[in-house]
Length: 263
Ligand code: CIR
Image (cartoon, rainbow, N blue to C red; front, side, top):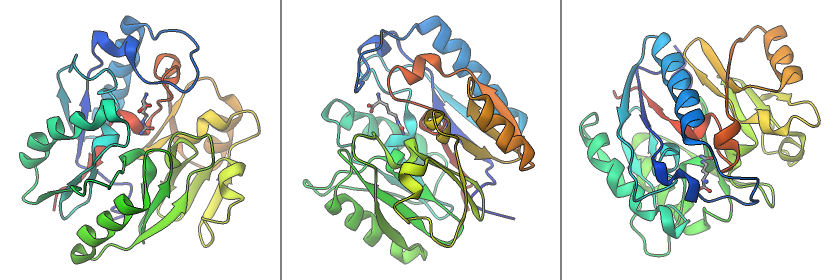
């Protein structure tokens, strides 16, 4: 049983009307809430189809980006760690998530250093280690604090780099199974995945690198046929989910859930 791809639980949060004010690197138009809700419902249904319990939290209008729950916490089998997002408008989202984690876990810790910043989108948990990409949202102090917190649980943290101009480490990669990582070539070329099997997304389909392996399914954003065919041919059970509205806010499959199996 691979702990890195098998999960009993997920937490999601429905998007709020304030989503139109969500952060974005480049403005390509406002997300449409109705369409986003449809995509979100398909995403939650796919998670549930695998047999997992999915907690759907209500919209939080005060936090436009709060649909992207992944950034608020790191969920490991032994416990959860509440993050300290590097985006000032998102800091309060982490505190909103904490009680929901406490309801499911015996142990919930938090990143608290005033100089520490770290977002879940920069963290890739594999079977053997936790990779954390330094980015505009995640700094060395945040990574060091996380490493100290999870060491007693037996987890090793390795600091890597998010490519320049890319929001999060996992914007450009995903874990497909215990040994295999789907990545953009701009990220895999850094050598950070040495020792893993790497599947590079075809050129021009970089936005398909953010998928999630959740139990038997690989959820990927719709509209990337070459990546879909590649994953299909490699034997993965692929489910395409509409992501047009989240993509306007630099969000993808991983951002929309926290995935875990509390011990
Ligand atoms: C942000 O800029 O924080 C949001 N608009 C998108 C967050 C995406 N989260 C993720 O990749 N884990």
